[in-house]
Image (tube, rainbow, N blue to C red):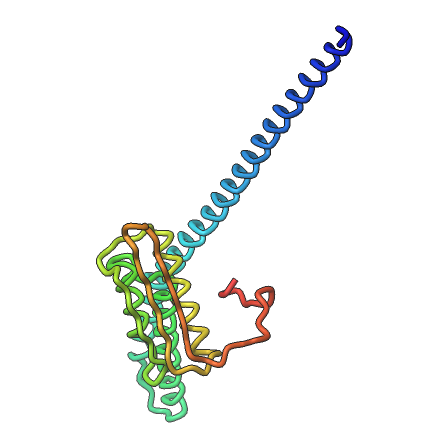
Length: 217
């Protein structure tokens, strides 16, 4: 083989090695870029969720600490009104009843926005209280968890509670079911959480995720 042929072979081999190294380099670079994008997306989503939780807590406190007492004071002032005219008496009575409904609604909204049980006693206690607060005659809810007494990451705790709230609400409103089963199982060795929610309702075979309401999204 001539020196020229050997030189060409060496050149081709060197070029192939360079191309291979460049391919590996670009593959690693692109993979790292994709992972960084994923991390940034997760951070942005987490920051959004945390921001929503902070705003939800602020709104709950404002409703509970400001609007509730203000309406209660108005109710006390109305109680002090003494009238003899039957029409006015009925108007005062109706106004008091409406105010009482509004105060109860504010308490319920405040509680739904920020469960005190969730903050003080944990996820399992908050779900148990959510079940206890179901109206008489509503769906029977069975709840099992092996995690009572265990602590959760605040984000996980908040997400699972809000998910449970939304699912129970939808079962009551849409499912025509009479039984709900909720399970929250912790595997401490594998460090996993398995959450399942089922009802025996009619379902919706035509359901499309794109058409889901705000709560499910």
